[in-house]
Length: 353
Ligand code: TYM
Image (cartoon, rainbow, N blue to C red; front, side, top):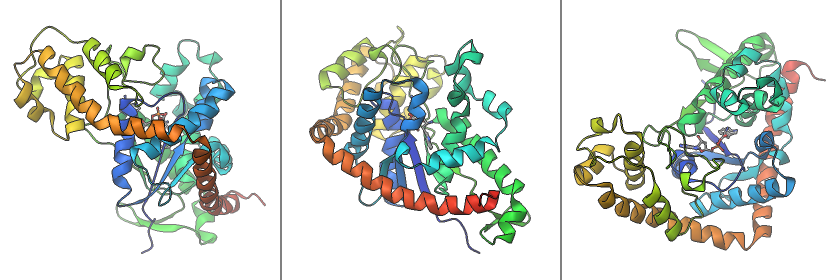
C-alpha cells in the first residue's frame, strides 16, 4: 500500500538571537535527524511579522538564524534550508486552511492567549491565525515528522486537526481525482491527501526554563538577557549568567523526586542532563548533596564545551552574509518546486481553476 514518504519539517522564528532552549528543544535534534530523514528547515520570517519587527532587523535576524542552523551542523546541500517568505505557497495554503480551521480552535491556543494579553480585541489577526500558517508550513510539503520543543505541542495538535478536517471535507474529491494516499486507520483503509503529522518532542528537552524564573520558559524575546544563554554568548557571558541564575538555598537533592518543588534546581540539572546526554538521576548521583556553588562551575564548563564551537563557527559565517543569502536562495528554489507540486493538487481539490 503506498504511504507518505517520511519527511521532516521544522522552523524557527527570526525574532532575535537563538537561545539554549531553541538549541536543546529543537536544533540539536534536527542535526541528528539528518542522518535518517530528508529534512526541510525553515526560518519562518512571516511568523515573525506578528511581533512587528523593524524591517532591517527582520532581514538581519533571518540571516543570523540561517547561519546558526549551519553553524550547529545542518547540511544545506543534502537537506533544504530557506526562509518562508520566499515560498509564496505557504501563504496560499494558509488561506485555504483559514477556511478549514475554526475561530474557536485558534482562540484556545495558549500561545495566542499569552501573546495577545488582556486586550485580545487589539491583537492582530495574524497572531490569531498563526497556527494556520504553521500548519501550512508543514503540510505544503506533506511532511510527516516535526521536531519541536514542548511549547509547540498544542500547535501541532491543531495541524493534525486541520489535516484531518481537510481530508474529511474533501474526501470525495480526493478519491475522484485519484490523488490520495491510502492509510490504515483503526479498522479501515482511508484515502487522504494530507498526512497526520507526528510531533517529535523529546521528554528530556521538553522545556528549558528561564534562568531568572524556573516557571517561565527560556525565550529569545524575554526582556532580561540574564534569563537565557544565547548561542552567541562568550564563555564569560555564560559563566556570569549561570553564576547569577536564580536558585534556592538547599543543597541539591539525591534523586529526581527531590526536584519536584524546586523549579530552578530542576531546570539547571535538566540542562546539564540534556547536554551530557544523561538522565537527571545520573547527574544527581554525582552532584546530590552538593551546593549550587559546586555544581554551577561544572555546568558552565559543559555549556561552554558544547556551545563554544557553534558560536565560533557562527562568528565565521557572519563575516560572509552573501554566502548565507546564496544558501537561502537555493534552498527556496528547491522548496518552491516541492511546495508547488502539493499546491497544484490542492487547487484542483478545492476547485480553483
Ligand atoms: P520558536 O521560534 O519559538 O522556537 C523554535 C524552536 O525552539 C523550541 N523552543 C524551546 N524548546 C525547549 N525549551 C524552550 N525554552 C524553547 N524555546 C523554544 C520551540 O519548541 C521550537 O521547536 N511556531 C514555531 C515556529 C514554527 C514551526 C513551524 C515549527 C513555525 N512554523 C512549523 C515547526 C513546524 C515557533 O514559534 O518556534
